[in-house]
Length: 625
Image (cartoon, rainbow, N blue to C red; front, side, top):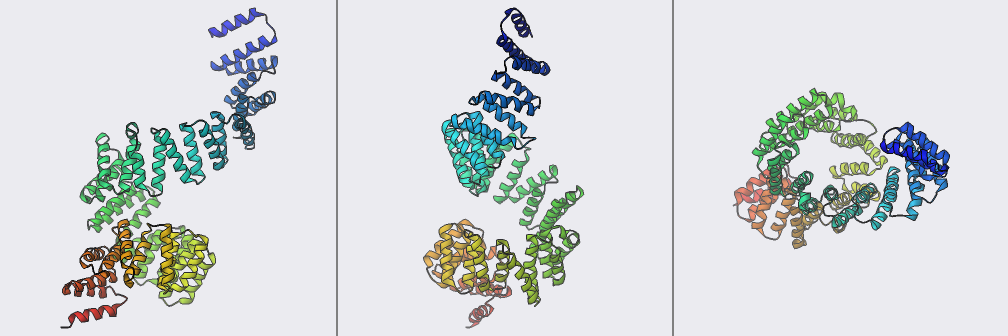
């Protein structure tokens, strides 16, 4: 106020003309606005404009105050006059765009005028950061991310290294679905500024989202010391180590963080996961139980505990843990999560083949809720009803799935399978014709699955070919078609398609295994077959079918000692596959271990091997003197 008083005194004695008096009112308006006297400021700006109507900056200041007071329509009026007076002045164009952007909250058409003004600045001064950032954000707001990315990329070419602009460019590219370019922009940003934490975390997230956890861990591990000190970076690094299979390192990182913050839930949860992955299940169970005391409603934690208990051969305790979780969730009104807990209970019972218990668990709930789309429980109940010979009830459950959904069409496919089992082929074919008529990839895939389950591979072939026309790059569809070719006796076509698939995706483990096993079974290309199935096992070391293929390839090459470990491992992993036990029996015969051969051949027969007569013949030969 002392400065304002001085101005008043100076003005009263100056005796200058209209321009001087207009400048005085302009300055007074600015000072009053700073002191919060908005009414006085408005009056002073209006007086200044009345005295000096061509003073562009008086109109800008007046307009800015009007915007601050929420009077955007009046602010636009001042901006419009200012633009007419000084159309090439960047300050005017910036305010003109700002005023119209504010007005666009009530009148969306105003946004176009804001964008046009900023494009004028872009044509003259494309390095104006304020204007270009605003322009790019307008494009983002209009769902035009490609144009936003062009603005930000051009700006970075002129003002390299600006973190905010890099962040906006990355966001624009991600929104445009240009993920590879977004990742490259993140890497460019880090080359210029290794300490750019947000770009490093974003790059790691992008790599993780596409399943490349090794690269994500390396991105974070390359952080400068000050970035690695960030708690979010440390947590993400530990997570990516775990996801990439580096469990010991992940656990070490987690325990270092827990030493500083023992109660942080995400770190303790990751600790439990890492302990479990390292086979230290008792410790993992202790951590999970401790966490549940403070987080009794956390469904993921309850599922983790149940899985750990089940892996310790305690299925009853696992189910009881989920039962308690479900009870708490249902009492709290969290019905969807409670139902998920019940589904997990059902899966435990399924793995234990407790089919009557599965029916008892789901039947009351399904009868009330399946029409709302609770498909997970419906499908488990259907399987249990089929296993307990209650086919009509299974069909009834499937008929109540929410109509007009993909889930309903999944139900049609399962209904068709059940109807075939009951000998009601005409009804089954009618349902399959509905799937064919829908004609989407999902529907065609369901249709092909039914044909393959019924061993109608020749009919599956044209269905899968139709699906591939809709999605030519689908590796899963290529694989299923190759399998259908092979099963229908068209092995050269199957072989060519699998080789084509592996050219596209050399690490597609099912194709590596399928082609390798095809050759091994036929006694062809055995060295190459061995390499293929070795690669499949490296990718999925716990896959029993892959272990069997590798053991069989060694067997066919006469490498019996190498074969033994893989075939015995396969029998442990997939104890319900008669082919695995037949292979193991053949190996034991070759090794002269006849008692063990008899035992595993009998196991193959007990599992109802498709080539049961051949297995019986092998057993008979062992009984002959």
